[in-house]
Length: 193
Image 1 (cartoon, one colour):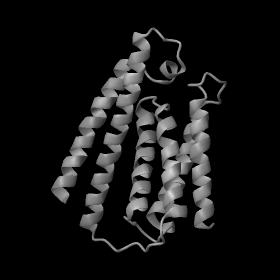
Image 2 (cartoon, helix red, strand yellow; image 1 turned 90 degrees about the vertical axis):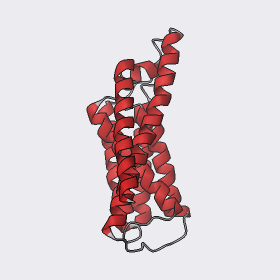
Image 3 (cartoon, helix red, strand yellow; image 1 turned 45 degrees about the horizontal axis):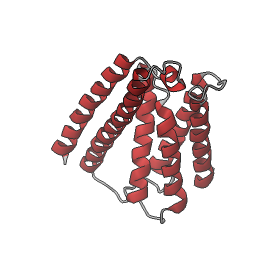
Image 4 (cartoon, one colour; image 1 turned 180 degrees about the vertical axis):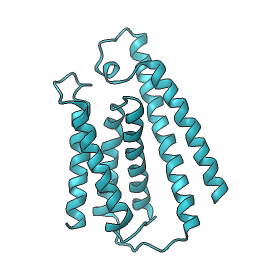
């Protein structure tokens, strides 16, 4: 299957997953949350396949490819975090950005060839990607936490956002765990670089 077609498939999956996950926030009837997460998982798998081999024959780190790689990491970690805590609403912010950055990388970026890299560079890039992804998810969770706290202070408990997010204490504990693990990977990035 051509790269462009696979990319369009992943972009469509990201966008449909976003819509499915946004329906409960908008208080519209929605299919099970699992359908949106399954679509997002499929999109992440195709995105990863494109990033790590099919698109340019290997890992490429030019500007748009790096942005797309970071979006892939953030989307993949969002799905992994969702296994531990029910924060599917985070996908409403993450998945459209991943779709946009994948589209920019595949359809807008100039054609480049992946350069061979030593394993040490790949390890350094992997640590940096994980650190950036974890800290980005933590930043998005902080925004959602602020919105959730604001809605609770204004007694808007019936808001769709409040219903879509886990309890405030769970969101806060997840936020601090992500920050802690993100700093561990950031330290490993500095040590390996």
